[in-house]
Length: 138
Image 1 (tube, rainbow, N blue to C red):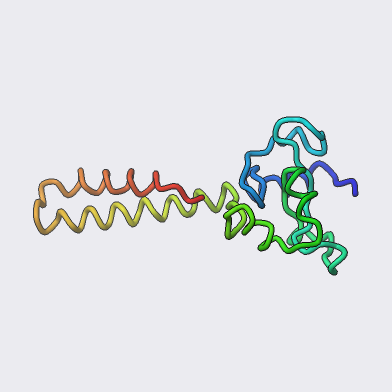
Image 2 (image 1 turned 90 degrees about the vertical axis):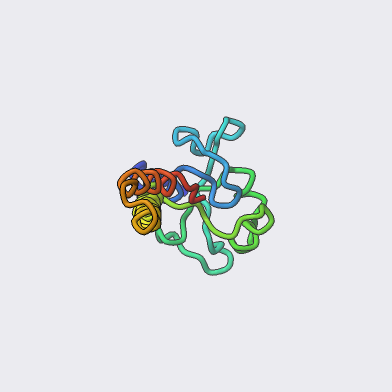
């Protein structure tokens, strides 16, 4: 099926440009370019043969080799074969999670020092925020 560029961009962005099955980084411009580095296709999470549709919530980016080897199996099964339990997060979701980690890190570090070394509160809160933000979410 031919997808308009706007839809391809949205599908690619849903997983931050990573294959939702193996997590490999994809190249946006290599959509459907077999053999190219980071080549990818649109993959139906629920296969059309199993009743899946072309609605956006059923479409994900997958490297060509993962898409073609998945066949009619479920996305969960295909990801499990690659040691993954979920699709990569979108950039917006990653940002939201990282911000939450930074706030939590600042609060925990700040409160911990407030009782033992109040003069280090600000330094500890900043350090906690930095450490929290740097936690890998994928």
